Length: 131
Image 1 (tube, rainbow, N blue to C red):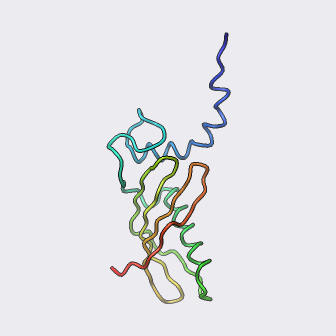
Image 2 (image 1 turned 180 degrees about the vertical axis):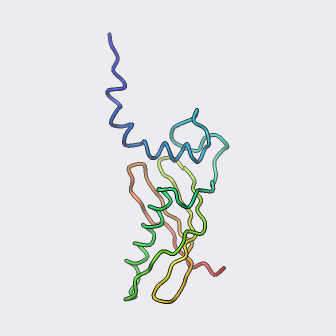
Image 3 (image 1 turned 45 degrees about the vertical axis):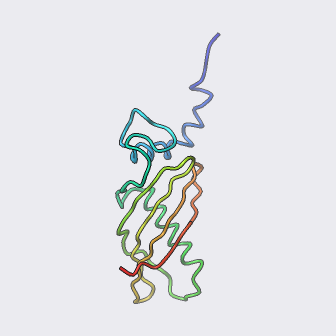
């Protein structure tokens, strides 16, 4: 009897590869790859603001903010001030503090974006930050 597990699961590995890599980044442990919070326990972890997953979450939040706005001036992302992430079950939550402009007006928004393993992004919360 021959087992061909690597062949059967090859495509599945490709689908979850980005999620596992993000999980590894959050956990800091290559020995415990997989779903959920591993390594140092559950909770929010600081993320590099230039990480591609953080950039995707920020762009999604900005796009959703623009769709919900009735302003003729588009929002533009100036800076990601703060980025944190938490792996929970089958998704990653990103908490971001964004500095944006709309025309000549500068604003800050605190947003929470969820990303499921299949790559779907969802803006869960958005509020003005007055700091």
